[in-house]
Image (tube, rainbow, N blue to C red; front, side, top):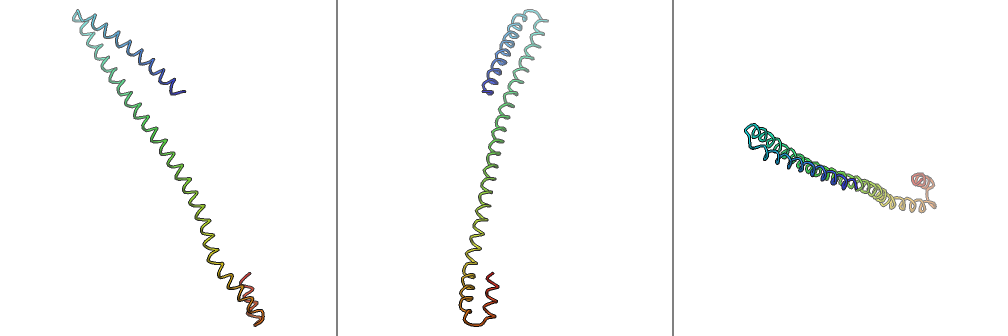
Length: 135
């Protein structure tokens, strides 16, 4: 909604500028009859040309500003996506690292439990050592 208001205001301003330029041109055409009027008209024409150039520069700068704003918004969105993706990858890495550790320790724990069960009938010192390791 704010953009529409800006466009409306810009259109009104442009209409006012166009009216002023037309009035100036009419003055120039009416005053060309005398040399003094011709000199003044020439000066007014220069001002009109300069004003037109300034308006073109303003249009170019506004377009450039809009392009830069769009690039900024895209960069912010890219950065937000990067941050989310990095966070998800980090969480996945932590989960997978714990899984990998459990997969490596599980056979060791199973072997220690089997060793402890087999030494219950045998040597008491060996059974106590294995039980201490499994704790």
